[in-house]
Image 1 (cartoon, helix red, strand yellow):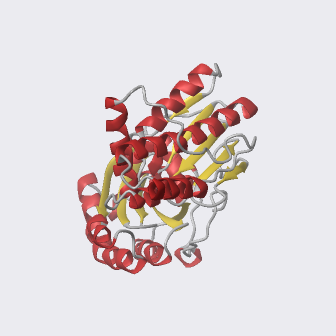
Image 2: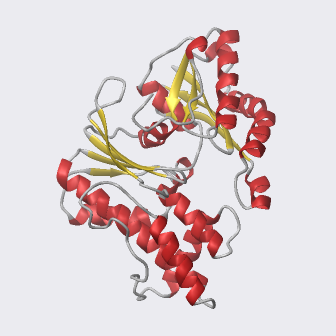
Image 3: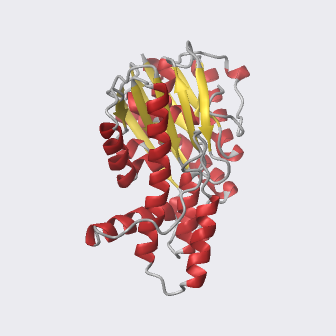
Length: 339
């Protein structure tokens, strides 16, 4: 089965062709990052306008690279939410039009759940599983008894305010780093720690670290950094970046290992843009190894952590629920446990 997948939930325009749920025939992403760098962040209308001009060339390139035509496509998958409404509409309306013209079934995909399925590309994680999506807009932990189309999915916890990626981006702005700040903050932190491996990483608070639940909160960390920079105006930005990264990673690792100890799943699936963070990937691996559980840690390749259409197609394959184009609509408020 060949699935053409389309992803336009935020500022990226993605299209991919996925074969049999685990082989990427093509995966094309056009970004408007340079435009948003000029304004220090994403302006929804700017993102949507750029996607309007990019969507057809991106789909054409994905089809050409995969060496397929519309006759080779068995279904079309598209992100319907959550995300920016203008951006979502670009992808959804394009997919609906192609579904109508090509007479192909349409599969709606939850963007957050799609992130989880980056772990299924050339891989076969076992159920039951716990998945943690850590991104710019979300920090959600769910328990999956199996693929959501046939099995129960339970939300264990989520952020109560800022998501982890959002905290990284906002603190990066406090440090004067250019957009996108989160990845630059992480790079700065990694360089500092390489040169200062013995530094104590306990400067900032770890919100909800000992709350014995699976909820997250990072707005207090942002406030603590702002106050520190106000009191220490000549602070070493690299030192601050390292301290911030450690605080965020410590909370995520603590909550993750607590979930593993409580539920003892077969797999732990890390996903989302922040899953590309080197410290998080390493520390989570160390932690799971040290607690001696049989749970297998799965983390996508770095280039599959950020927004792309490949995991949308994979999610659609494993949760194949075809719809008529008439019944598909964008839903920017979708939660991770909803279609």
